[in-house]
Structures are given as structure tokens and as C-alpha cells.
Amino acid sequence: MMREIMVRAMYCEMLGYDASFTYIHAIKLAQQGGLLEKRVGYLAVSLFLNEGHELLLLLVNTVLKDLQSTNLIEACMALTVVAQVFPKDMIPAVLPLVEDKLSHPKEIIRRKAVLALYKFYLIAPNQVQHIHAKFRKALCDKDPGVMTSSLHIYLQLIRVNSYKDMTGSFVTILKQVVGGKLPLDFNYHSVPAPWLQIQLLRILSLLGKEDQRYRGFCFLYFCVAFVHF
Image 1 (cartoon, rainbow, N blue to C red):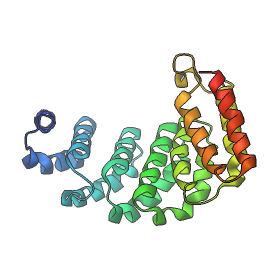
Image 2 (image 1 turned 45 degrees about the horizontal axis):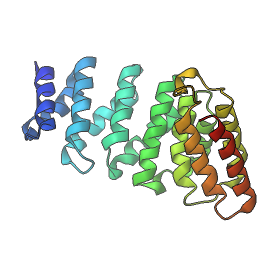
Image 3 (image 1 turned 180 degrees about the vertical axis):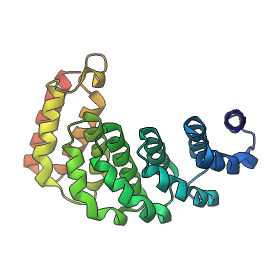
Image 4 (image 1 turned 90 degrees about the vertical axis):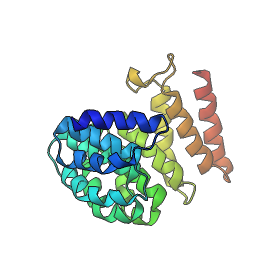
């Protein structure tokens, strides 16, 4: 079966052998297969192809179709590929659909949409400047995973522009984290979401880089967080 051949091709590439003759079949598997075949095809594409590879053009229509699918798995797979290998010049084709996923009822879809937009911001920041309001909505999402994903975007945004008006929001989130308000899945050796705390402290340190008052905020909550380590 083509699915099994593709798995062997991925092993060959991992071992350093050239399996480029299978790349087109990975595209076809993602386009024409059932859910399991499509999943293997998307995985192979994300491993085989880089953002500048010409074969990605053949995948655009498939990704557009899967982003509009009512099947949760298909939408997840499409968002994952978009966040990993989609090139800059193809962003306009999928951006409206990814934006719509920010209001999807399933938190895993919202989370993957935020990560896709984060990738878009890294490679083409001008194309996502108009959706900052949706970034703020993601920051206030009821799902901690979506909120955590949005912090990656804000860590980049704050390096370019001032977002001091949002300091209160970041401090509130840090209070909730330190206070153990997140699910236990986020804990590591009984420490409440340590990597999330570090991300928030980085953001606060950038906000207070040239402001003594905000620097005090950062130092205070660093001390509070350190006590929990």
C-alpha cells in the first residue's frame, strides 16, 4: 500500500538516503486518501518539503478544502501543515480561513489556528497586522492552551511595538498561573506551568525594559514565581 511505502520513505530520509522520488506521492496521498492515508501524506509533506519547494503549489487546493471541512481531523491536519511549511506567497489564500478558525467551538482548532498565525507573523508580519484584535481575543480564550499559544505572538509583537496597555492582562494571567488556577496537566513536578511563567516574565521584562514602574512589576512577580520553583 502507498501508505506503507510512504512510511518507509520517511525512514529512508531520516537515515540520510534520498527519497525525493516519493515526494509527489506524498502530495497525492494527502489529496486523495482516506483519513489515515491523508494523515500519512500530510506528515510526509511536512517532513520532506521546505517552504520554498515547488511541489507545495499542488497542495494549496487540498489545504483550502480541508480547512473548510466539517471533519475535525481534516481541519487539524490542514492547520498543522499550514503552520509548518506554507510559504509566504501562499498566505493570502488561506489567511481568511485560518482567521475564521479562531472562533471555532473546538479548542484544538483554535489553538492550531493561533500557531498558524504565529508562523505567518514570523515570515510575513505585514499580512497579519490587521488582526491584532483577534490576537487579544485569543489571549483571553477560556482554553489555557489557546491563551498559551497566543503568548508566542505577543512576545514577538512587543519586541516591535509598545503594548504597555496590556500589562494588566499579562499580570493577571501570571497571577492565575502562580495561584494554580490552570489544569494540573500544565504542572511540571508540582510547579504550576513553569514554561508559561517564564514566557510571561519575558513579556513583562520587555514591557518594562525602559520603564522603572513596569520593571518593578516584573521583579515582583519574578520573586513570586521563584518561590514556587
